[in-house]
Image (cartoon, rainbow, N blue to C red; front, top):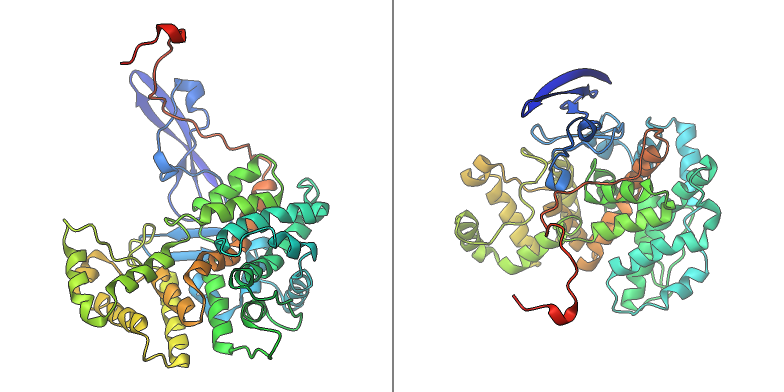
Length: 432
């Protein structure tokens, strides 16, 4: 990383600030000493123009539709690799050799079981609890069951905690699903892959053998890869902020899960599916397209366009292919919701209004349809997002902990409340 100096004026004061350039992407102005030199802070609601850290993990170019994990294009990883290979890449910075991959897969697989007392922990929750509420509670509770890997100053404990979180997250997610529908928990099987194991833990029942659909398993594995990391988004920033205080990794990831639960973040594919339900039938599509084009109508087409990607979402291309593979496997011709989705996709890819405004279907549009077709209820969509994202959260947390320059997060504010005033005894107060 190279650095130069930039000069700008605030009133009569001339300020010199370092300008740092990354490997690729825009440069940043280092304002670390701005307050000391000027007595002023910057104002950036949502931190949309602020780099909160240096990172080597993920790069996004929203204008060009680029997403790189450690320099590797997302489409290449999703097409040629698997999720655990992506986890290894995010954690260690390089793709594993065959021997490293075998060892890593073995370690993750042997950590998939959770402490048996966790089953009784679940029994303290209501059956109708939202699966994400269960995930927030159970992920945070891991620190009580695995307190031998909460010392963040010990590299070995950090490594074990990382393996445990990546391995146990799908187990907890499957337990949350099973608990919500009143079925018994299904233990993981060591001979199965990551996505295969998760599908079996979700859908198997004791009274019959469960046959894993390889197309479903591959589709879910791709979903995990595509959602594994996405730079400094809200939940990742939450994990880093929690971690900056020295909190244990299980607590930090639980904080990330809680943030992901927000409908503006992890609930986007759920919102897209709700929109398809609102449209109802193919015949209703023109009416809703007209509403979407009407500036005075508050209706929005969910699952189209993206806040970061001003061009096509690079993940959507892989997700589109995966979605059609799943639908083709099922031959779902009688589901009106999926008929609406396919027709809406066709219109969005050919209508001049959508093309001009670059409102292409994004990953949330396709992932919502795919997960529904695979049998997951809407309440599980964000849970699956959390399972996918845990590897990115852990990689970001690990990078932050190992950064010698990291500090506890402490954003500043622009105070607009009352100026200093004196306390008035209650008998003397009057209503204004």
